[in-house]
Length: 107
Image 1 (tube, one colour):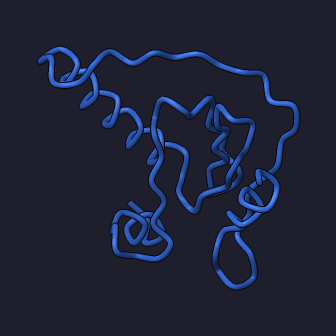
Image 2 (image 1 turned 30 degrees about the vertical axis):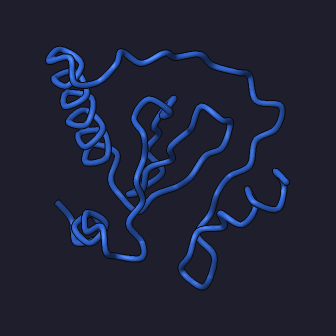
Image 3 (image 1 turned 45 degrees about the vertical axis):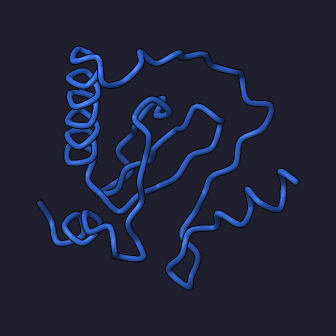
């Protein structure tokens, strides 16, 4: 695990990002970072190596399967809509991601 990956695993860290694995469509290596394409048509580049990120998603999916098999979680209902437009969520110079784009364009 690289130093960049380690600090993202801490929930109290401002740069920590939580993903629902069911909404991840595809992950792509972009140098030492990972581009995450989401089911809503948006993408975000995270400061994590592809193999590390995919391992985390794999672990999350395993936990989901265990919960479903135990009956503690209803089986997911999944459907996909083709996005009309896409927008890449990016990290701004301030170090924060531009999530305000979503708020401004979905009112």
